[in-house]
Figure 1 (spheres, rainbow, N blue to C red):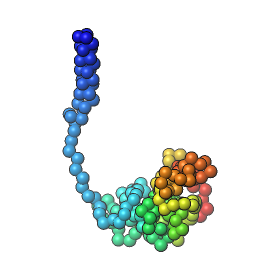
Figure 2: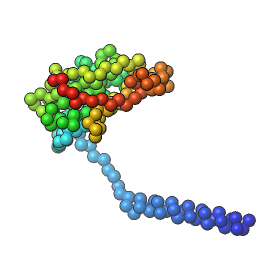
Figure 3: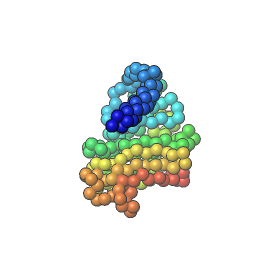
Figure 4: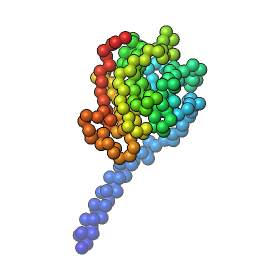
Length: 203
């Protein structure tokens, strides 16, 4: 019994020493972190992106993208306003994602993910106007429209991978518990991450 007790104590001491060594760097190099507001005054912001320069693009759920400059000042004119095309009445609907083309500085293309007035997901491409701070809202080219059976679980994130493809995150279609089993259905786009090639220019 004494040997067993001694062995248990040794094992406990080893564990304590290991925990101490793991937390020692945190104790030695811990520092206070404080937050400071850089820009304010946004309505339901859901995404923030940059185009490889000093600007930040703030995506608002109601269908507006605003530009914040390096001083934290928001441009008075929106970069893109497609509020009239976007349904944002549902808590998880609206303009949900933004991605700039890897060759944006050359082709001025960017992509958005939004819920249209019929309640369905739209993946669309736009270009900027002659003014780099204002998009051409008439340049919309719809690449995908995906039916959404419910108003929630729409996903929304879009991003370019290192392979140059556009990745699209879609929710399972909504309600609760995926009642239509969309995520497990390989014939459905819902509940998946799609990868599409958008390099083929049509305009």
